[in-house]
Image (tube, rainbow, N blue to C red; front, side):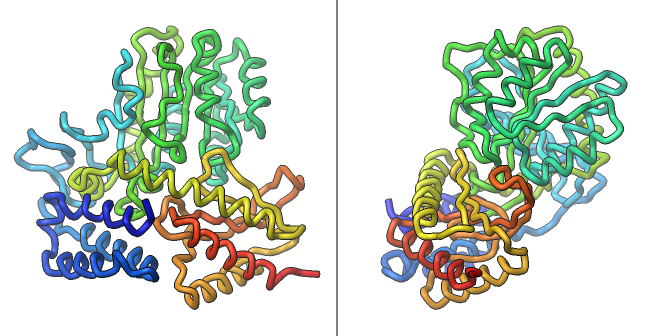
Length: 447
């Protein structure tokens, strides 16, 4: 299915919801007509993407009602309490109704004998902060080791700041092999494993390995930021039981909203097995008591309006999300292969198992240099009518690019990177997007 057809199918899904009928009818009607007029235009992709984002804006605008003093937000109906909170109050308690989509967000957990508690935050970073603030309180004075796969830059900064001076030690591992070796070496210390899907680790494979009963018996719990892994993907062998608490973190606005970024929502799901070790059971009970407090004092609760919007639009929709994810991952792999072939040293291309973005190593460049390259790329894209923009996240219908500086295991030093999050384009568009980046990068190549 071509990208233009896929966007139209996605837009029909959200426009057919009851929520869309309660929005600005005339504006949505005008945008819908424009969307349909662009469907068959050979050069209409860029206009189609921007029109879909205008529809996003129209859907996201709602009228505030009620009062912040009603500090309860009920998501999912029926039943719905007589008074619920619509006000943007970030310390409200959120309760999920029996039909709320997030109660069973991960299909691979629904048939297993476990209890799940989803807690909604205003971002995945807020979910992580709430979890570790609660862990600090529950494990106060008790030596604990967190063994982590290679961490996303912002997550590393957050954990280093939050855990400083506590009884919790963070050990980050730069390879999958070292991660497994470190976990095995730490026995019998109290250890929590942390997996980060945004970096180079193959986290589904690691998750499967460390939740195997013979291995998991050494651990207190497993935490997994699975933001860049399809939420429906089962990382476990079908016959395996879960015998250890799981803390699943996900940003819902990256891969699960059809590239529209309708609302920033993070979710922390606590997964409690029927049987676990006494130490793990004590940890889980402590977190159940403390997590709501940590969430509230951080002001990290998800916006009631944002969550209700996603629920009303019936997102995520697995059929639509699976198609858009598959297209974006194919586009990333194709662009990365072409960049690797076309760019001479000192440029280098870094790929990831998640295939949601690729990094271009711009060795010897400053961030200012790469910002200039991005300006050239945007200018060229406007001329060629290609959907390329500056954007620091992933999961777009267009191609986003950003710049950052980080430690590079390949060179051993700090390097500047251009991150390219490729939209789910058709092959002919990917090839033109790649050529645009190659032209921009080579034009400012230093000799």
